[in-house]
Length: 174
Image 1 (cartoon, rainbow, N blue to C red):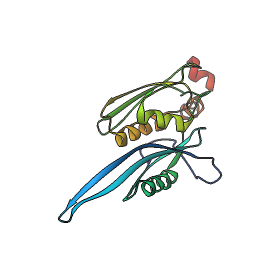
Image 2: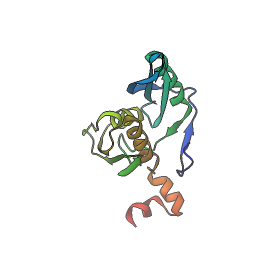
Image 3: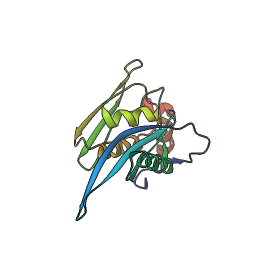
Image 4: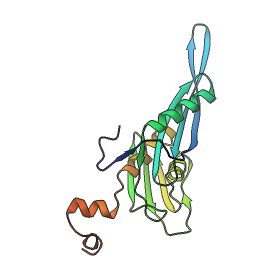
């Protein structure tokens, strides 16, 4: 699922204290000759609030089972995100479909300045101070995936130093 990204560390859900956040529930209608058949789709983000996060989609005739399926799906694709003292290592843009997301590190005490689906993802990751802007489509499915696109492109200073084959000091001071 995350093969387009470098250095993505997938995580197994065993032994993690995962908290799930419901991003959205949609009622979908299928019109048949016998009338309307209602169903529900739920988007859920799970995370340990310490750098591990995943998202999932569940569909069912009832809301509760749709949410349960979404949580199970989210646990199947957990990834580790590099964090830096409660914020992000650097600013990043992400996109998926018509949704565009911009996330930027913030100083301590700023809080999570984000709305809707972006907030749910960032809180599940464990980011405490961040500035963000969601542009384009506000469709929660695509906004969650755009936020994941931005988070998966983040790299910490150590991995950059290893990739370039230089010391940490040289990464920061040139």
